[in-house]
Length: 240
Length: 240
DNA sequence: TATTATTGTAACATTTTGTTACAATAATAC
DNA sequence: GTATTATTGTAACAAAATGTTACAATAATA
Image 1 (cartoon, protein in one colour):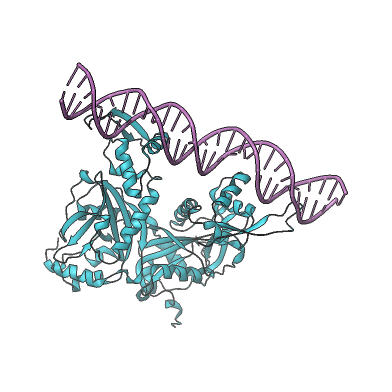
Image 2: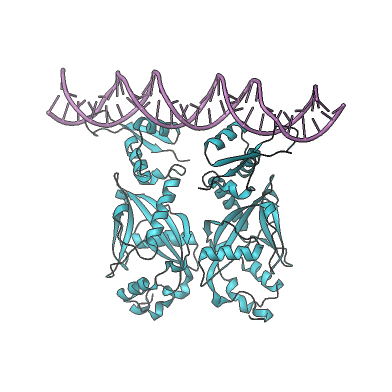
């Protein structure tokens, strides 16, 4: 491994030029829908976890591995949703600042200041199952509520909005709730996921009947110690 | 303009390396759903209309312009649906053959033999409104039924399948029928579009009621000379 | 043992969708 | 002209899905 401080960043010859990826990782804590944002070392710049594609790995591999490296989160189901390729999307100033603040030589990494097209992915994860770890480039990695996002670099704000739209469109069709809940959960917890993601509320009885008749749930034992009332059943998703 | 036969293909310095686009253009003739396929000059190779992205144009611009240049079809509404980035998707043999058969120098166009990631778009168009014209690289450009496609180069077969899936998913939600019909059309013609795209048939009365109650159609005068029976109304889509 | 809040489900109302029936025609044949 | 023919527009009814209300069951707590 190269130990020269000035050239230890990503090397041009290892990567496909002009191609990047970004990821919008949604997390749910039982109450709120949040997303994962990195803050770059000493720059005050906030960004989505992203990266580049090595010449010898597929796009999907690059994204799975890259997100793992930057966040410490493993076993994510990432779904591609859009490729962003506007002319004005890339801001070389931001990238330059990130390089400088991380002690990386500009000349040696000039290819990173060129124009990039970015393929965007999203994932859903249960908040409490993971402990995100920032990589060497980032000061911090944290969950942010959608209505309390810091200003993001480049077009990352647009990417987040589009991810949210896609998530809402796909919620029912793709059984996405699965990733935000523990193995076993109550009907109320499931309803919470739907309500927070879609931003609307449902009648308890109608929601329950619809979910039960959809034939996607397995009913297990009851969960006790939930309060002074009848204990709810626990459910899990049928794997299809 | 460069007139040297060996170097008159796309020049490396004008384009973003490793990035291509492909388009699946669906056409409907009142009866069948077809797609547009190019046959490359003297190679027996069939492919989707595609191209590359210039350094000074956005991805969407490149696609709109590129498809126009390769097919002669203007004013297409192209929608991005997926980016293909597998390692094995690019077949440099096919590209080499295309270059040779078009009298282009391999050395001068070596960058085209490298790995590419392709952003795929689809469009819908009324068959009879257009007259596709092949560009200089292609022998022919023709409409093919989905069940009579020739073998396509690289992963273009996969791209077509995925385009069809996306089209079906989006048919209702995005009012796509619009692009396949003349300005004014009968209810039967509209039903035909839905049935051919979705590959299933609907009850006439239920379909008619659903479309009328969806409040997306404007009713116009009747169309006479349709045969020995009551004349149907003509409709157009409300622009929203 | 009474109280409390939530849960599971039934019952009914409303809306949407599926099906059948039939009258209203344009063109054609006579 | 008039009868014939096939398709269209719409109403009427049936079935299914969804929305709403009601209420008994029941864990924990007081």
